[in-house]
Amino acid sequence: MKNSKKKFIVVSIIPTGIQCSIGGYIGDATLVTNRLASVCDYLITNPNAVNGGAFNFKDKNVLYVEGYGIDQFFRKQIELSLPRKNNIGVILERLTDTTAVNYALKSIEAFQNVAGINIKKIEFIKPLKKSIRLHNGQFCGEVEDITSLLAAAEKLLKSGQVDAIAISTHIQVDNKYIRQHQKGLLPNPYGLLEALLSHSITDALGVPSAHAPILTKKEMELFLFHSFDSDPRSALENISAAYLGSVLLGLDRAPQLTKYGEGEIKLEDVKALIVPLNCLRSIPVAWAIKHKISVIQVRENKNIFKSAGYMKKSDRIIKVNTYDDAIREMARTPKFRHPLYKHE
Amino acid sequence: MKGIKTENIFVPCQQDESLESIFSKANELLIRGKKKPLRMVLLEIVNAKAKLLASFIYEK
Image (tube, rainbow over all chains, first blue to last red; front, side, top):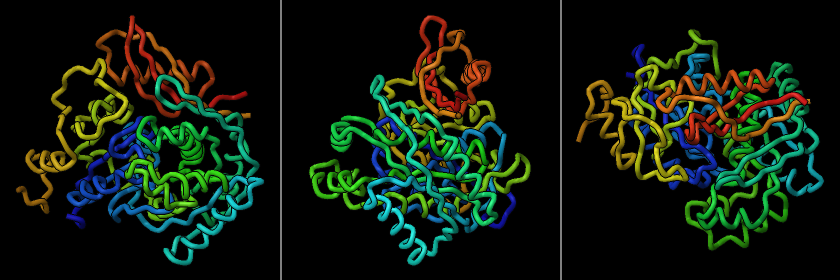
């Protein structure tokens, strides 16, 4: 199958910041993502599903695509290249907390020397003015001026040595929000602002990008030494002093975004879009239905959306109980069946 | 100067309007307001208005 022209591709999206029971913490959707990937040639997913602090345990055929890139893919504005090794440029905020910056730099050294990640250049920028606010149970964000971020990204790309961009900045979050998130009472407070930063790079420059928060020394103490009562799903937070690692491992072989018609990964080869329960009101779902791609929502992945809203019943939308059921559903339906998958 | 933010926007719509059409209207509305749309999620439809959570780039 891998050598044939037609590929068996599935997209699984686990949005950030909506308190998903699987994927609402850092990296805790990796297991289901890899299980889905085991029956596909390629599984496309968003960074939130597999970023796990200093770690990223996604399988090789999991394609790490920034959320805005996934939207554009479903809108047929772009296609994706097959994964190959990328050269990564890193944008770091020059914080006054040198411990925080040194940890980020040590991550870069570690992943260059141990994991063989090609990190070609680092650009420092002044800390961006950012704010988050809690609105109706969901965090919203704002960055006052992204000019320096875009200029740094452009400089990295113009060097000719870089084709993917990792961003690492400090996001100030009230400790009480972090505590409530760690106990499963609030969505991840960082997610939406992180997504804003990576969307703006991918939109402006058309390259793979992802964001990792830099933790200050005080925040490291909170996460590493004073959070042992947190939900087990957020345990990677408790053993990660720098989050850049997961992004570097994700971008290492992230597919490049190509012009529509020029990529090897095409929307026509997508057999299904898998989303958490009631996550049916996004751009990928709208365009999946338009392009007659089946949408599978998974009941076990509950989140802040308590209903599917106004969505009318459609034979394109299937509801299953678990991610394993989603795999069975793909095997049961002839049009989904992968030749390598043996139906139980 | 360019900023980025996420906020709620409201778009007039029919109760049974397709998602694709609602997103297209929201896109147009943002572009008319000189905001570059990035991502959107439809939150609800109440009284012939769709409420969306939209992320966009804006010029200052």
